[in-house]
Amino acid sequence: MKNLKPRPLRPTAEEALRAVAVQAPSLPPMRMEKADPPTTLNLRFRRSTVDAIAAASAERGMTMKQVIAEGVRSLGIVVAEADLEDRTPRRKDVTP
Image (cartoon, rainbow, N blue to C red; front, side, top):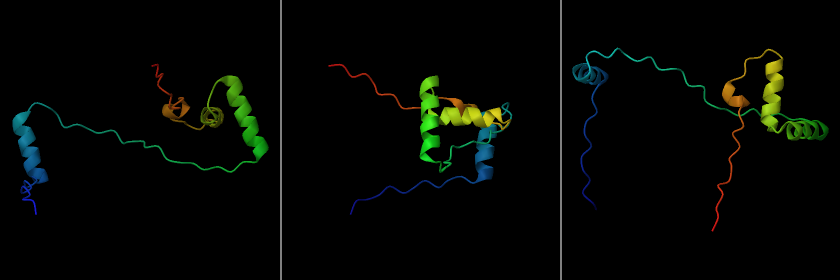
């Protein structure tokens, strides 16, 4: 069996705050923004509706998600800017 190195003890919250205060006493505490993580919304539409959304997105040069997000925003619902972006993964051009 390998000899494992002992794990260093983690400082308590108070010890960590004291260490930071010694290293950077003039810096104010930071306020962290709340994260807005992505999640999944699963919708069930008729094939004709999906085909119409796909056709509209192709005409506009947008993704289906962008078309739906634009429609939701047009109803006055706040939509995160990230949801209006085309985040489709692009293939890297690999030339020999």
